Length: 274
Image 1 (cartoon, rainbow, N blue to C red):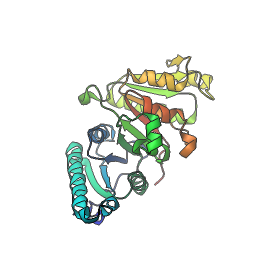
Image 2 (cartoon, one colour; image 1 turned 90 degrees about the vertical axis):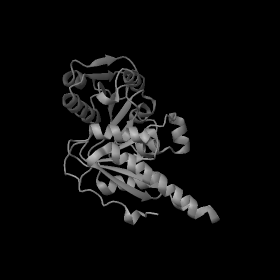
Image 3 (cartoon, rainbow, N blue to C red; image 1 turned 30 degrees about the horizontal axis):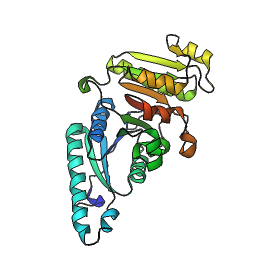
Image 4 (cartoon, one colour; image 1 turned 180 degrees about the vertical axis):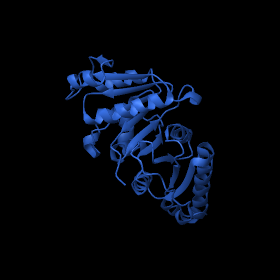
């Protein structure tokens, strides 16, 4: 059985301030995890290595008594199979790693160690309340990850993802970071960008919105309602994060939208320093 010490060496990633310059994907052997790999491969900066990490808590196997060796071997095989498929999806850019530990803590440690600018996770379709109560991986890392987070959902046409992008703005610094990222993506992929400003949000700066995005769509609604509606006509929704963590983040617009949206959601946070 392979051990964490025998996992592939960490790739040396380029030093850049792009959200997509140092990308890490959480892989769990499920289709949502592989969809996360596919979208990471599309969005990552060209020629940038992408790290796929599979986390297995081998201590759970130790609780199985006499069946521990068999269970540990099975967990190991599943992790190897998941990483093999992830490597196939990512191609030559893929760097796969096996990590032993609790999933959320291990992934956060990997993000911090790699100075990742983006963590990509698949959506398992859990309702937001369910993820909060049972500690879903995506839900927990939306609160605690120090970098931008992409929650990947299947696109209608995977071969042309993202075919359309929407972004929410409110005149804040966090929204400006989201808008810049969305504009860069729209230009890079040559796809339409819809800018949405929900006027019933907290501390909305309407004057700043109209100066920055005069052609944006202003909607007399709460941000969550407006952005979830916009997600139904987009393949990627980009929102900013005001930097809230833990219990303060549970009611944040970005966290609620990420759980309720009909498409993939990119929550943009400031790029961590190296």
